[in-house]
Length: 140
Image 1 (spheres, helix red, strand yellow):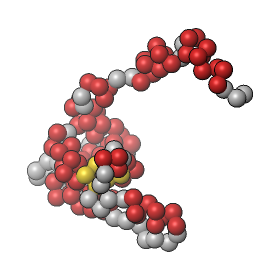
Image 2: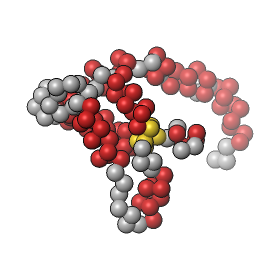
Image 3: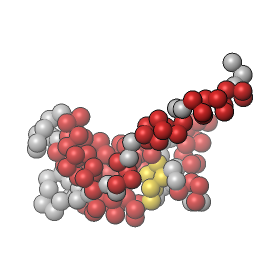
Image 4: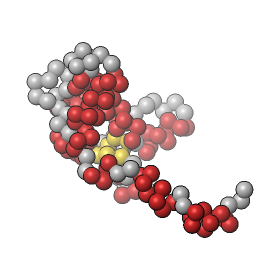
């Protein structure tokens, strides 16, 4: 994996660090122990059969020891269900994912992860000065 590719995937070791930091696996849990998360990682990272050119390209880009963005999102859903779903706290998948986000992820994010990008846009990009600067280059 090159540095550029690393920006689009999360290696398994980093994912395990994320699990630990977010206190997602729990010893004694019925569905969400470390081994369960490891099995989910393997299942989510399994490559599709190469039935067409597009799936072949995806498989070539997909590192078997790392999660691509869409795989990471699938892991969040699976872990939410494993930790809070299946009737443990809720039977609703969206509630289970929301609980995982609220109880395990959002409170442990660094401050910069919580910044609203629209503040920068409103103060720096959506201004009359910026509009005047860009307008001459627009073709419409």
